[in-house]
Amino acid sequence: EIAPLLTVFCSSFQYLLRAIDDEDFFGKTEAKSRWMPFSLAEMVSMSETLSDLTIGLIDLGFPESRLTVNDQYKAAVNSVRDTPMQEQDEDDGLDVHVWEHIFKKVYSLLKQLYIRDTRHQFCPDGHWISSRISLPTDRSQDITFRGPRLASHRPFRGLRVLTRDDLFESGPPLTTKEAKLATVLRRVPFLISFNERVLRFQNLLLKDKQSYQDERVNFNQGPSINISIRRDYIYEDAFEKLSPENEPNLKLKMRVQLINAAGLDEAGIDGGGLFREFISQLIKAAFDPNRGFFVLTRDQQLYPNPSVYQIHVNASAHYYFIGRVIGKALYENLLVELPLAGFFLNKLLVESADNLDIGMDYLDSLDPELYKNLMYLKSYEGDVTDLGLDFTVNVEEFGKTRVELLKPEGDKIPVTAQNRIEYIYRVAGYKLNIQIKEQCLAFRKGVCDVIGLDWLRMFSYRELATLISGAEHDINIDDLQNNTKYAGGFAPDHPTIQSFWHVVKAFSEEDKKSLLKFVTSCSRPPLLGFRDLDPPFCIQNAGSEPDRLPTASTCMNLLKLPDFKTEDVLKKKLSYAIRAGAGFELS
Image 1: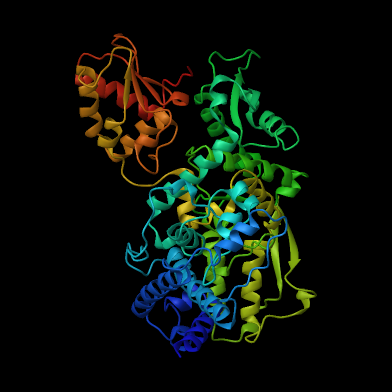
Image 2: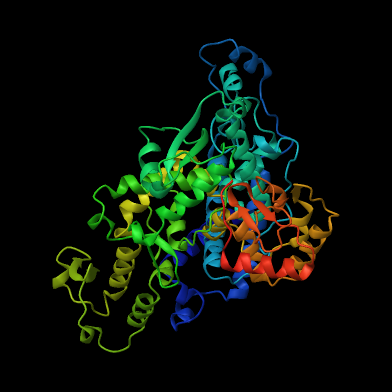
């Protein structure tokens, strides 16, 4: 009896949430009393109930006691037949479709509340993590998002009969627990902690790499990508040599030979460090606003340049290439400090293939002043026609202003009290979606060429930023110390090393970040701790010259530390080096 009421409620509230903006939702306008039937506290409680209901429906859809194969004889016959016997699914009736519909409506509403909380938090920390989800540990790398293995499990329907070809191609079916986990990760991944999802993500990457980077690549055998890049033309050379025509598969192992300004090969063999530095420098060059592909918001966040096609005729090819590079960095678990705008990252996670449109609430992160003016117009109590607005928008490009129509003959349609909501949404849609549509589509296709978007959708846009650039939290020096290697005669009990850690632990958080950036080129620690830093953080004895500064080889995460005789000298020299950015050299 409750099923129809639950479905109607979820559907109705979803439509309401789509119709109201954050100003109304959070009670910043008088419209709150008219549109929002619930307080924020009530919605916190509601989201908790919906979360429990979603997990309960998943448990109902994949019961532990259900037989995985209804008829063993049928499976045996199908294993030797070219055409499988027709499957008679006794559960494939009206009740199954009803439960599927309820499940979809419940998790969709839950997801909408989560997205709203992601933009502007109203739930307490840790609220979304469900303790009811058990994570299998025996075959964690086998959790998948696509293919026959997941398709063989259908909520509320049981396991379909598998043919011999299915088993040969995809392996044994997922267990019931694994099918539940895969469903949670696809539909409501935020019910699992971020660290657990990162671990699942890395396991997915590891399994995928086994298909493209087997052990032979460590001995210069098997398929790989080998390129020579001029350091002073790193973007131009990479764009040409890593084009889809020259390198269609960026999942392969990549080795880089850098060429200096004199045209000579730089010393060193790429065992992974040079590639890491190459990717870091390439991304910096690609996202440099002076190159024209990306511009900065007022909060210094990067997003695609709306006027890029006035600069680069074939800009889409460049965005596709840059997307592939970001995908490669994610695929190789490389962190790059990149302040990407949240609304831009959110477009990567949209489920539609061709429509990447996002709602007007993200306009605040792109143009806060415009957003504020539109909210003023929304609540304006005077005569709207006195403002002299019409359905056009002024666009400034290279010192010139042109007028764009927001709808056919928009320059002849005045904005009134009756149509101002339409005007607000059209202005926001033009800024957020229309102006950068082609750029975002090309960029996302590039990312998708290397890494599955289904995998990235396990994360919110804020978590995706963390996945790309690392977490913004205090650096755990004890963790770094426990995972540091030593070379050149240094050891954990060496007096200089003991002085080093004593000095570093007394550093301010800013100096700790500067040290990490000095050695690794990234001021943020690895997502799951320094045990995942590759290559490991290493301190090498650089001799006993008292006037020498510490130097670093970022491609190897290597700090070359002179054997200073006193702690005061060590602190002075190390502080100077990391604050000045001095002493970089390439091994």
